[in-house]
Image 1 (cartoon, rainbow, N blue to C red):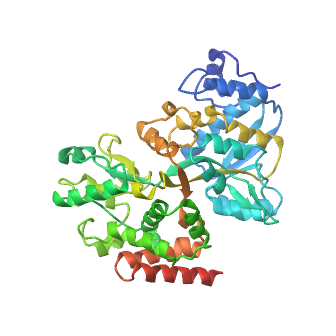
Image 2: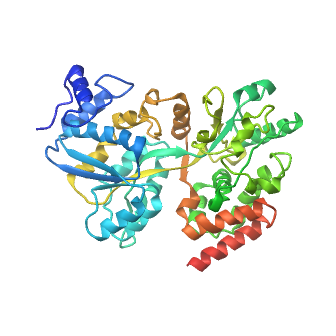
Length: 452
C-alpha cells in the first residue's frame, strides 16, 4: 500500500534517522525551504506499490548520494522500489545495454548528443504528453530546454525525449570584490559597460583579464567557450543552432566575426596578462591565480562555475572572490543568453514508474531537495531559491532563472573530431597569432567536411 506523506513530522524524522523502508531521507517533513505541499499532493495522487524502477546515470560519490536521497523520497511517496546506479562509462554502457535489449528504465545523459543518436535508433521513448507545455511554462527560457531535448526519431520526425535536471553555468566572470572596491569599479550590466570597464582598468594601470587556454591534450577548449558565449551575444539562438549543427558553415562571416570579437578581448596585450600570443601556454587551472596576487595581476577571469576548485585554499566565495553574469550587448537586443551544460533524463525502457518519476521531477519539492544538497542548479522558476545550499549557488541559479535563452556548450554537440579536435586547435592557432580568424574557421570547416 502506498505510503501516506501526510504522516507526522516526527514519524518522517524517524524514517530519516533509521533509513526505514524508502532509505535515508535527509530532511524531515517541515524542514528546509521546501514545498512540502507539492510533495504531499504528489504522494496522494501516485501509487506505485511494488513497482520497480531502474535509473542509470553519470553521478558518482557525493552527487550520487544526493540523487539517491531524492530517489528515496520518491519511493517513500509512491511505494515504488526505485534504485539508482552511477557509472563513469555510461556513454559506452548504455549503448551496449540498449542494443542487448536490457536498458534501464530511465537514463540520465550527461549531454544531448548521445541521447539524440539513441532516439534516432529507436532506443528512447518520447516524454509523456504535456511535458513540453510544462517545460515551456515552468523553466526560464523554456523553449530553449524543449529545443535541447527534441530529437529526430527513427522516421526522422522530431519528438521531445529529454527532460533537463541539473544544469551548470558557463557565462560567468570572476573577480575579487576587494580589488573592485579599491578602484571603485561597478559591476557592468551590459557588454558595452564591460568593455568600458576594461578600458578604465587599463587607464588605471591594471590588466583586465587573466586568460589561460592550456589543458594538455585538450588545450584550446576555454577559447571555444568564449566564442560560444559571444555567438549567443551577437546572433539569435537559431543562428547558434545552425552553426552547431553545421547547417551554417563554420566559416560563415557571422562565426568569423564572433571569433574576432573573442580576439578583441584576448588578442590585446593591454587586456591580458603577459603576451597575448601566449595564452595557450598558460594552464587554465593556473590562470585565475592572478586574481589573488598582491598586487593583482588581473582584475577579471571569464570561466565556468567549476573554476573555484582551482582558487587558493580557503577562498570564501562571496567575500574573497565573487562573480557576475558575462553581460549581453544592449545594442543587440538579444535578451540575456546563458551558455552552459547539464544532464537530461530520457526513457530508455518505458513503464508507468518511469513516467511517474518524471512527473515527480516536475514538483518544486524535487528540485528544492537537490538544491539544498549542493552542486545542483535548476531553471525551474517555481522552486524556492532559499533552498539553495549557498549564496553562490543562489546567485548562479538566479542567472539561470533570468535567462531568456539557454544553449548547451556548442563544442560538446559537434562531432568529436571538430568539437574536441579542430575547434580546439583552430582556436590555439588564432589565439597565438598563427592564423587569422577566417583561416582558422576555414580549416575547421574543412575538417567537418572530411568527417561527412
